[in-house]
Image (cartoon, rainbow over all chains, first blue to last red; front, side, top):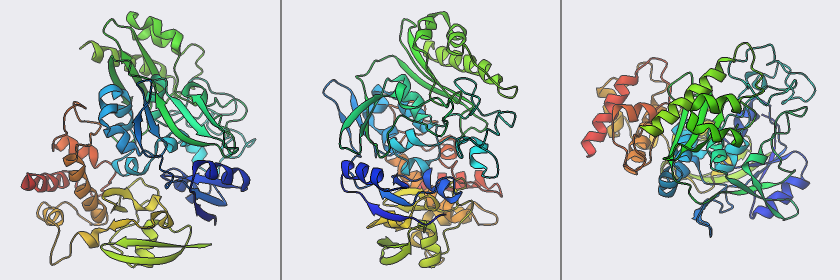
Length: 316
Length: 170
């Protein structure tokens, strides 16, 4: 691990300004992904700003009947919150499907959104990777790609976003609240938060340098049946091959977002009108324009079947 | 580059001056010579380094020691001794919950915390209804222990040990 200096931040605005003005600085909260990457020298910050003391660890009601989740709320606490379990069960289920108990105790809401891909070529510093080293090439294209993206990818990158939580937040129309280095707050719809790889796969979100996530807000509950179905190579503690976050109403209408298939949680709202017609009708529209590799084309069938499972569960 | 940190480990206050890069795991093992906590993968995948910090189990390899100012850390040495074992340690011995023993300190710390999590009502991936309190079932214990790998494959005996400890408390 490369050497770095360390400080504890006192306010969000101060933390944001400090990262923006200090070359090579990064925030650290749970640290479960950042430190892993620092040990491999994939991340090499020269200065760490510890934001754990910023009092952003509350879950509170918003004035419009929704929920504001502080950036530092741990995954365990968010999944176990009585309001989340009752009104946003898809979020509890997504969180509980991810990582291990030890990791969920440390990992934060904001850090979960910002975690980096688990593409094996991103992790292998002996191989070219446009995300790790812009311009070096993509080893995954033509390589082992079973786990990787089937849609929204580019000639530069076919990595997926690994989060389960973010897929549920996408289906819940969450909003990411931030403070920028100049002290200005802004609200970013989750749909706009993660970028597609395009020609710059190393830029994964729309956050500006130093911009700090302070909270994620959820709109007021939409009711319905909530489920998160995750298909993976092991029964526990593995990343998704395909996952579906779904909310289904009694009349068969609903919404669905997919994980494990793209560089960001994948949701096509226009396709959701087909929900009463069944999973295949939805999936055909959601995955229009998909460009799977020969190794991961199975994900298209799997995604439709996983959604079918979710819809069957909702009807049962 | 160094920084100072004060951590309470197994009830004893420790003042340390550490390279900022020092993981909590390395601080425990290398600086405090508490070698019960084991380094397996050093990437949060195996759980051998599991310790209990402020009542919660974490991977001590994936956190910096300097991030734990004022924290209370319990390691395997703080749970029990060979003369006065923690009930979970005694149950692991009784049920053969290990073979080579390398993962055992992490397994035991995790197991103790898992029973607390269930008691506190924290749900898991296999909890059937999020509106109910989770129960101590083999399925719950297996899911909750999935972050602790045992290369010797003592899993079913670990579940037996945990079940016995959970039952004796009820």
